[in-house]
Length: 246
Image (cartoon, rainbow, N blue to C red; front, top):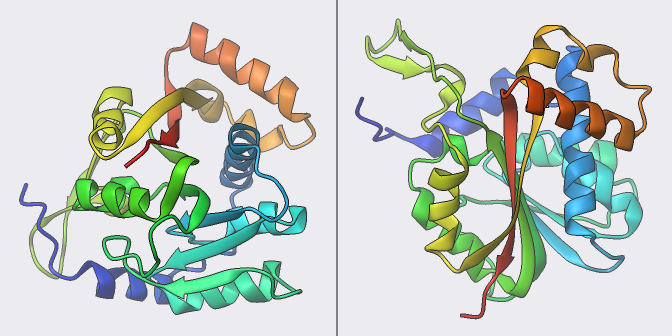
């Protein structure tokens, strides 16, 4: 399949107009996002006053979790609508940052951020090396980055009724494992600190996550780890990275 995109900026701006990123009616998806943020906050260990860039901020889960802790979250997205939604819902004290920008051209000075995160974004990107390099450029040396993606996704294609070309469902262009995603960041100035696989597909199929909201994080994580040992089908993967000296 030819992966060259016609106009990704226009696509994702229209995408934000068509879909409500803040209305998560599916309780399973809601709990999956909640657990991912739990992993993120524990992996990053961010302190009050530190600045993190949320590259591809979508529905603002990172801002929702970290702004109340005194972390400065700079949400970056192609959609002004999504950014406005994050500010209105999760930033009543107006303490965050909101930038409409392309991840291939981040409008920040070098060494601007103490940390970075990008969740369910890299599978959508055409130019992976460019995005990883841009993100490294705005990070301070020693800063951590948390990148999460679907793990070994079987991408399904359908025939678009408008252009009669094969189109990947959910606009996913890549399927990753730890090596394919890791190599992208290793070649752009990062060290891999940790690889975390989570959200077992077997438990998801049984809708266990749908009813797991009451579980403390540690209990949920133990159950998820055991499930991934027995049924080796994690649905998500996260890399915790450290920005190396330039």
